[in-house]
Image (cartoon, rainbow, N blue to C red; front, side, top):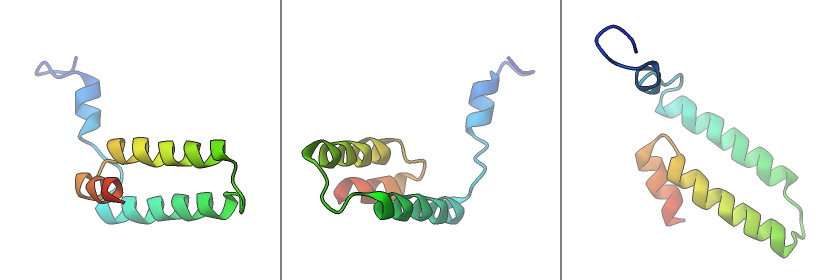
Length: 73
């Protein structure tokens, strides 16, 4: 715990290193790179894995407004 009774985890959680625009730009870089490496003819397992990735990714995405958009896609 830190002085004042707060634990380090709760304190660190509020300190995000990226703002919304930076987070969005970095995310687009990741997603475009994933797309570039995604097979032209994915197997059913690869399709399922990618769908699962986006489902999980959208649940934990730090920008709640953006996460909602991802979940609607």
